[in-house]
Every structure is written in C-alpha cells, then in structure tokens.
Image 1 (tube, rainbow over the protein chains, first blue to last red):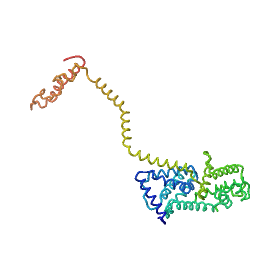
Image 2 (cartoon, rainbow over the protein chains, first blue to last red):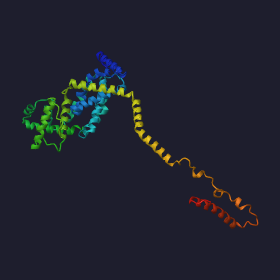
Image 3 (spheres, chains in turn brown, cyan):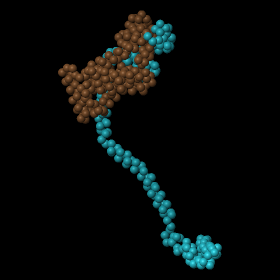
Image 4 (cartoon, rainbow over the protein chains, first blue to last red):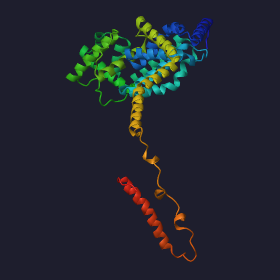
Length: 197
Length: 190
C-alpha cells in the first residue's frame, strides 16, 4: 500500500486511468505504458532472457496482453506495474521453456514463479524495479561463487564493471588474447551453473 | 567450487580453436557493451554465451535502455491490436453469414446438375404418350390369383379321399393360365 501522500496520489491517478481504459478508452493506458516500458524491459525482461530482440518481443506481447485483457485487471491498491511484471515474467518463462538451450534456465525461473508476489510489499513501480534488480543480482552473485575465482574476476571486470578488454587484461596481468580465453571460459562456466540453481 | 569436466581450468593451455572462438566471443561482448545489435546469424553456442553475458550485465545494473522510438512503436502496436480486437468482436455474425453464402454459392452448380440429372432419368423412364401401359390391360380371370372353391366345388364326404384328383384338377387349371401368359409374351395370343 502507498506509504506517502505523493505515492497515494500517483496510485489514484493510475486507478483512474485503468477505470477509463476498462470503459473502452484503451488509449488512456498510453501514459502508463510509456512510464513502465523501460523499467519493465531493462529490469524485468532483459535480465531474464539476455537477448535484446527477444526482450522487445516479450515487452510487446506483455503490453498486448495487458491491453486486450485490461477488463480482467482488478485494482488492489498496487501499482499497475506489478501486474505488467507478472505477465512479463510468465512470458519470459514461456520463451525459455520453448527454447532447448534455455531449458535449464526455464526450470530455474519456474522455481522463482511462486515467489513472484514477494516484491508486492511496495506499490511504487520504481521500487519494484529496484527489487527486481536486487533479485537478479543475488542470482548472479550466487552463481559467481560457484565458479573459479579467476573466472569470477574476469566476469566482474568485463561485464559488471564494464572495463575495456585492455584494462581487464592488465589487471589480470595477461595478454588481451589470454583474457579473451579467460572470459570465454568464465561465461561458459557461469552458464553451466546458472540454470542449475 | 564445482569442477566442470568440459570447461578447462584457468591455467589450462588454450588450443588454437579455443583461442579463435574466444576472440570471436570477445568481439561479440565488445559489441554488446557498445549497445550494438548482434549479427543475426550466430552459432548456437555463441548466441547462448552472448545471452548469458547480456543477462549478467542487465541483471547487475541499468545498462540497457530502450530507445524512445522502439518504445513508442511497441506501445502503438499494442494499443492498435487491442482496438482491432474490439472492432473484430462485433461483426462476428456477418462473418458467419458470409461463410454460409459462400457455401451456398459453391453448392449451387452441383444442386442444379443433380436436378437436371433427375429430370433426365424421369423422362427416360416415363413411357411414351398414346400407349397404355401393359399393366393397365385387363387380366383374364384364368391368369388371376383366385381361390379354387369355384373350380373344386363342395367336397362330399364320400369323395373326401379323392384329394389327388382335386389337386390334379387345380394344377391343370392353373397351368392353362400360365401357358396363356407365356404364349402372349412370346407373341401368341389366346
């Protein structure tokens, strides 16, 4: 539930938009979709699918589902983002389930589905997105501890800290070519352990 | 830390093949970090590893943004699709009517052909005018099915045992009628 007057006002505004859309004016949803598109894409979908094109497809499907099934939405005092998030997570899971190479990840996501209601403690969409990021980071950190320290460092430097290849190689005191091999092996090891958690 | 049988340890020497793959993967990661679109045709493993790297990067911080034009295109498509579904929901009955009409138009030639064929068969089987059908000619009594009482008469008690004679009499009478029918069909007349 909303914890301050500004948040309560924002929620009430959302509620009115939903009511208008459920009366038949679907375009009334546009402000909400514009507001939540990026956090949904970058915090919820992309960390789960890892492919920008697939993430856009899921975002499009999520919005399509939300628009066509808006009459099924029941206002419960939480941000509309929570509902969008639930739809998006389910679609990400469906995508993994259909893809052979992501089958283990699908199993991992499926274990996560019952706890999807966890972030609903806050009605604010941005807080929900932040909690999503925290969940993703926890999942990543939990996998990193299972691989070699050298591999963990390679991933940390290149993918999380986003340092250039040359700088990463210098920190590890190896050549750029050797660093490429380290990163290649590191991501393979990460992938192997990620879906089995 | 789990040991991965198929993944070399960090200190294991690299093979030329692995070096080449690693270099190619490094360039894909470079493109990903620079927000470039990956090549459409990637090997299975390369795509899987790139997705893993993207997930790590996206899950760690707000590294990825959705361009405004892509965002608006997605929203426009969703709203238009939703509006389209509402439009399509109303004239469902007209679609059904149109299908029924199409079905009738498709069956019409076959129905007309069937009626014409039935008429042709009827006309062919109908006897020509001015000639009375055979079954309308009066059938002589001798050729009709009839009881034998008039032929045999009342049977006296004294002649009760003469059944064979009576049977012969009936047989002769019926045979006469049979022969008449046979001769008439063969052109004779009696």
